[in-house]
Length: 193
Picture (cartoon, helix red, strand yellow):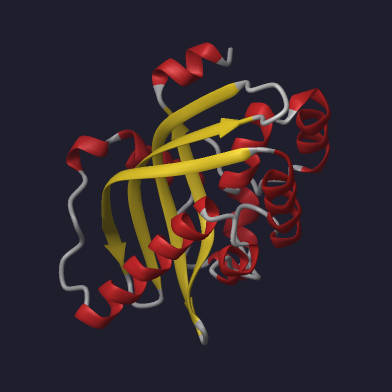
């Protein structure tokens, strides 16, 4: 289970050894203990809880009693997160990322996304998208994601797939991605060992 910005995952796939080393040097993910002591994460689920949720995809159901306007707003924010990335629309993508994320740093996500857009062709496709948890100012969106990254210089292509829970927090200016929990498919895990 990784709790990082999705761009970090993709950058390591085709970015070469230099990008992988940079990612290792700069990646800092909060531990469960840090999350518990950080008041900004009061509403965020712990890494352990999210791992259990992501692993048990067969039992996931759409949350009930989501107000229609909130369901639309959350769905629109998730679609913007995916569509802006696919269109390499940096401004639109970063506008849906929380400035106070839980398990990655905004500046790191900003830097990684710029590097991805500048160096590789990357696309995400999603299936089985559903809001699995809604608590007023927090929503968890589950999706099965396939990310294909192609290095235009070498034509090397890498596809990663897995299950993801994207945690959104409601801010004054709308729903923002505050945490990303991605669990690679068993096949991808075995290929990367």
